[in-house]
Length: 418
Image (cartoon, rainbow, N blue to C red; front, side, top):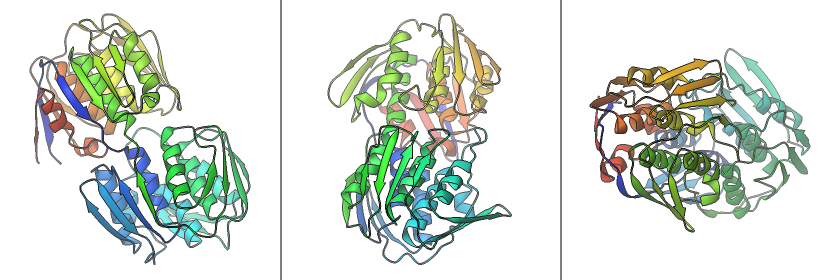
């Protein structure tokens, strides 16, 4: 899938518009199959993960039209129960089709999911919850076969506020008889967006964004139009791009509340941040302050999806910073690539200690996962000389036109196809 080449040293300046959120659109695309209705979705990002979801929808018999950032889906023709293994293995989010398919036709056959290699992300919570709702689940030879003669609403206590499990339960609960209550639910804004889409289609869900979500099962859904929320992680990545280059960037189409944890840490690092209703301006500091401790946590804590990018920033800080990764246990693969560029980082299990260096030096690096790849590009923006980031297909999973947006802001950057 090619490589990105960055010549560092340019101060970024200008405006960037944030596209729709990857982590919001993926569960919504799964949700489109529940009602056998038509959905028109706006602000749909052009991402590799979205392409895979569209292939899954097509494989199930749905009709999909996609033009620029608008997608139309007709799920009436859905006529399959098995999701192709090669698509599931490319993307973990495909697992949320389980709840939607059980809601729609009472059966699904799916392989164990793939995606970024950032440590074990067991789907036990998903399977336990679906069983509580009345699904019979057989697991064999890497495949999961779920069936039900009818889901029945129940109370589900999650051991951990898993985003994917919360979404799967919501999708299943929409088609279940009676009331489903999720306790210790994930509170991420993307779950609110899923609730908004489903309620517009006629579902009866309340409580998204809190730890208790209630879903009243309904018999049918209606055609719906929905505008996808902006991507808070893409916005946070551009905030770090400004910070790491002493830049001055205006970031448009954002929801300020979603960025509070990121903004707080960037202010600690010395950034100036000004906000209005739907945009913010961030000015990078001449010297990056170290941050005593960053701990990744479920929302509204500091997002694990921003950990790699903040590590790149702190690698040129003026002292020692500590990052504690509490969400995924194998999410420091970018550290060894940053070390190639001259960073002084030591990892101990889920703890990373970053001693800031005066400057990074361009090097040949490899993106091991989506956010780690973005972090290497950010490091390249500040490094002396040329940085090459290979395996950029990871980056394309979650960033639309990343190198082009950075180029418009003044970066010396180009993408070369393989």
